[in-house]
Length: 188
Image 1 (cartoon, rainbow, N blue to C red):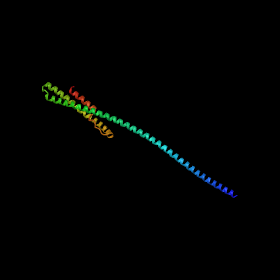
Image 2 (tube, rainbow, N blue to C red):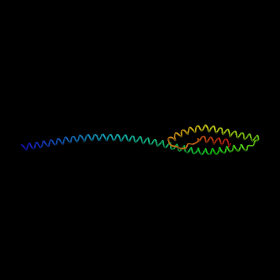
Image 3 (cartoon, helix red, strand yellow):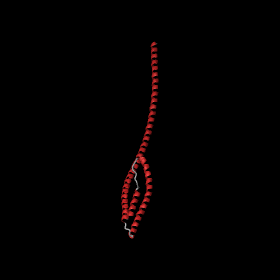
Image 4 (cartoon, helix red, strand yellow):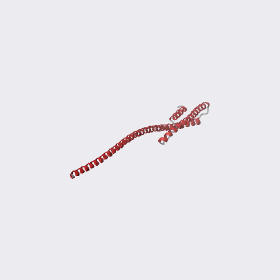
């Protein structure tokens, strides 16, 4: 009987140990399931964050593309303005040379004019024409200066945005008008 009691107590002891191992295994399984759920939640959160960051990256790339496009357009506009300014400077220099020739011609006509009635009348008529053209040119120049100043203010606002550059002194239209006036007053 003692043998039976010893075996029973041994079996009970083994059953108790098995139950303890089973409880420990259940706890480990529950903890592992909990950790797996937490890891899955973290993975989902990371996936959401990754998607949001990719969307943000796409929007930033779009904005960068738009800014680069605007920059290229402004750069092209600035290059066009520089080319126009160079052309205007050349035209202005040419106009100044023509104006000097006209002024020299006026002085020459004034010094060498013959005071006979016919020659005096002819010289007087030419002088009036040149003076009238000069006055008309000055009036047009004043009117064009106002337009040039308005363009200068527009360009200066662009310069504040995109950097410093030299402004043209006169517009292309003013230079062309000066050329026409000079040719008309010379009789060329």
